[in-house]
Amino acid sequence: MQYPHFFDTIEPMKLYDPLAKVLGAFEEGIVRFSYLDAVKLAGHSCPTVAGAYLMAQQGLQALYGDALPQRGDVEVSFCEKKEEGVTGVIANVISMITGASDEGGFKGLNQKFARRSLLHFGVAMEGIVRLTRLDTAQSVELFYDPSSVAASPLLQPLIQKVLQNAANAEEIQEFGMLWQERVAKILQRPKEVVRVKRG
Image (cartoon, rainbow, N blue to C red):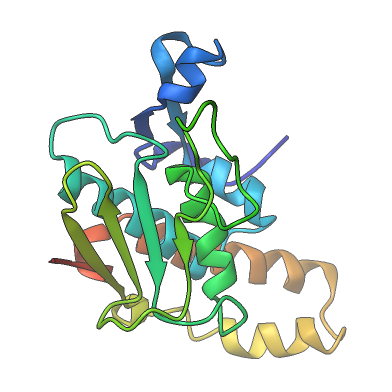
C-alpha cells in the first residue's frame, strides 16, 4: 500500500487501554494510533481529518501531560449535531482514538470498561469539541482553524476540473499532490491551527 511519505512523519499517539489489557488485545494495554490509522478510518486525507487528529493529540496532551492518556476514560462532546458540517468525520476519528462511543458502543464488563454514552453532540460550548477526563472531571475545549495554511493557487482551478470530470490523468495526479501538500503543512503546524482552552 503506497501513500504520501509524510503520513509516517506525524507523531503517533500512545494510550493506555485497560480493556485491551484485560482481554489480552495489546501487551500491557498500550495502543498506538497514527495519522495513517485516521486516514484508513476516514478513507481519505484532508484538512478535516488532519484537524481531528491534531485536536485529539493536543487535547489529550493538555489533559494528561506526560502521563499516558487512558482510552475509554474520556468523554467527548461536540458543539454541532452529528449530521452538521464535517462533525461526523471529526467524531469518527476522535472516537477511534479515545474509545468514546455513543449509545451503540461497548456496554462494559460487570459495569467496568464501558465505552457507550461517552460521545455527545449539540452541546453548548465555545469550541468545536470538548474532552473531559472521567476520573478528574478536568476538561479542555478545542478550536481548529487551518485558514493560516494557504493552499496552492493552482488547487482551485484543478478541483473544478476534477469535479466536472474534465481533468486528465496528469491534472488529477497534480491535484492530489497539491491537496496532500497542504494537509502536510497543516499537520506540521499543530500549535498554529489548534487552540486549547482549559475548562
